Length: 231
Ligand code: SF4
Image (tube, rainbow, N blue to C red; front, side, top):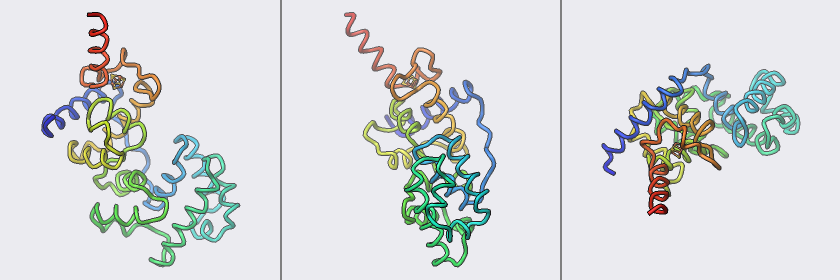
């Protein structure tokens, strides 16, 4: 499919999802360092658990200097409800120490003055920060044009045919950034996640009630397979 046809398809899917679920409202915006820590805490767990872990961390250590200097086990204990605390605690502390050494302050506010590519490069050079985590910080906190691709966006986008089946999440993110208008990144990203959680589930997509089935490659392949079985 040509890129303008794909862009039109993406726009139609976005429209249908918005009609079905409503327009997502932006959640409270955090400063970029807080957003980065929250996103690290969200890896491999639910938003509810990562939000609780983040709040517990801030309550136990009100300033980032305290987190950086604390015993790692104490940090792990504070974020335990977010899961993988033995990995996430040293990862967060390492980033804080790196910022302290390189910048002399525990803040990522300087990213505001960078281009999206410079900021992305800086973030992904931090240990344990991948393209999706970086894109979350860019989009949610810095309000820069980046399209995070998590497991839901990746699965739903591949099934619908917004990008090739073999596209990695990183490649899918780059393709979506080309296809979708920047002003729609946030809304479309959130709607694809909602859709992945509620209808286009990993193990059993509920195609019969899906509002975007007319646009979905996976759905039409199912229909064709059923028809060929009948004939
Ligand atoms: S038709 Fe099925 S596979 Fe396609 S987006 Fe909807 S639920 Fe997912």
